[in-house]
Figure 1 (tube, one colour):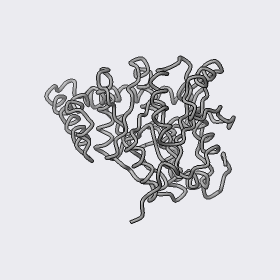
Figure 2 (cartoon, helix red, strand yellow):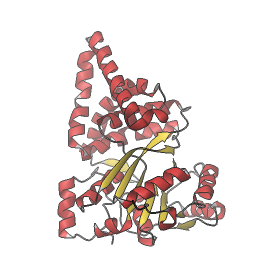
Figure 3 (cartoon, helix red, strand yellow):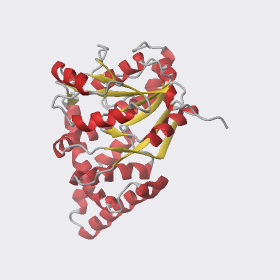
Length: 329
């Protein structure tokens, strides 16, 4: 069996937009290490002063550029597509600024592109000290119980994404849009649920701000939307039946524990993480209805505007690919 592609044949694209500085020392330390393994391109949409600061402190081996004006409502997609346009590598790793690969996990995600057009690894929080890290981990575990999670990083073949014409920059759930676009173009996805890539937990303030926005993603997944919209009426009914409410909470914990144990997840997910599942389910029962309110008002507030579309269906994307509708390539 031939070996898969190596890191010398790959590039790492990091779309970045910081207004408040972020944890620059942590990012620089990671970029220094990362640039010893793989070519790194930071597509930096930060304000001019912040961009200039980054240019001063980023490692010399890291390439930094402004995003191209592609007209994307979603700035992250604009950054990714700029990176794809500028990269000369066939094998691309796309990652948020809070993702932290090791050399081994990076090598594996790239090597899997030998048999795939897009690879979906599994994120986890290495530091569980923030209280909300376990809360958000419960969401991840429930996703794993019913399939796969949606991480903040993907690996993709450049040629396949180019052949598809890129992917829509006018959606909220951009990673799902990219995955579906690759599949719509006939590409193969590998769900590497046992390939664990660390992620830094966000601040509590950012976590609170993401609750309804994450729920809005369900408008790209109608089946899931219907189930989660039914949670609040169910919970209100169960409030009058405490025993059944406890049984329901227990069922959510068991479900999350199944996700924790799946694909060797016990190696990285804390033993008590599943206990937070009832809290996350309660949160989603409320936030999905708040997301519906946003939907009725024209979409999710995003960078001074509103994004109405969470993501396009696979059927819509197949029609788009068949028509050869020009996007960004």
